[in-house]
Amino acid sequence: MTAQQSKQYPATNEERKKREAEALRANLARRKQQQRSRKTVEQNTDTDEQGSTSDKD
Image (cartoon, rainbow, N blue to C red):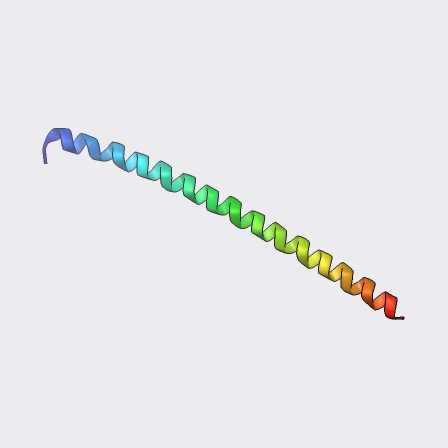
């Protein structure tokens, strides 16, 4: 490997690390949003079930 090639690899690794970090942040944000959506649906379902129970009495 030439000196020029060895200088090139660290930059490539840094770029790769930046891309991976960005992808991880995006995945985390997406998972958090999905989790929030599920909580909202569960809360709505619980409220609906309680309302339905009250209507039957």
